[in-house]
Length: 164
Image 1 (cartoon, helix red, strand yellow):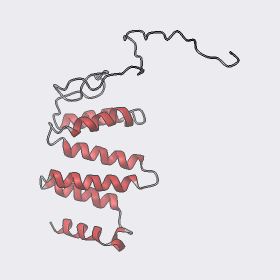
Image 2 (image 1 turned 60 degrees about the horizontal axis):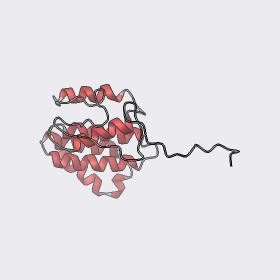
Image 3 (image 1 turned 90 degrees about the horizontal axis):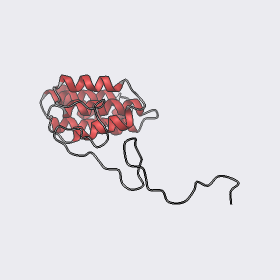
Image 4 (image 1 turned 90 degrees about the vertical axis):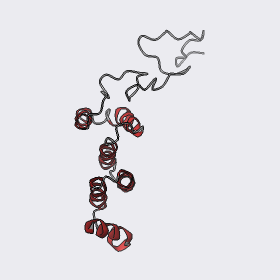
């Protein structure tokens, strides 16, 4: 409890905030709250840490670390709907940039006995949570995928440079 009080007080003092490693402070506070089973408080510290990380110059990796930390805090409650939101963000935003993340997150889900495979078996329209319905539908004018019906031709040809 003493460490928690010291770190909280340091965050209230602007002179301290300027010289301490805020990522480490927020991470420690998340760990302390998590150890006391204070999930809501841990998530508040995660949000503060993510906000700080987003303000850094090269923030991609730091924000990703906070996203992973949030997932690990939320997995304590496997029916938390925000887990699906995080997994979708990992799949759509982070995986194309960091393919190694798939195995890491899969291992993390396994440690918490999360009951669903999250990436490799996902196809368009499949939900991220067990029993979840369609994840989304492609609307008119959306993206064509193999196996879907051919789009109706509009009767117009593709314009090429030099054509009238």
